[in-house]
Image (cartoon, rainbow, N blue to C red):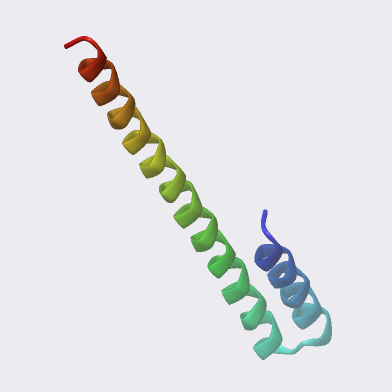
Length: 65
């Protein structure tokens, strides 16, 4: 869970406790934004890993020539 998700949960809970629908909604939006950031970071890492595998494969092929 990233900091946006934590802040969002705090805002959502505070909004529920005080009856502030706007703050509750803001918290939910923050949580979703945090989830999206987390997924984007995972995707970036996966793509970088696959690219590195391709470069490693190419390097091995070049060494075997």
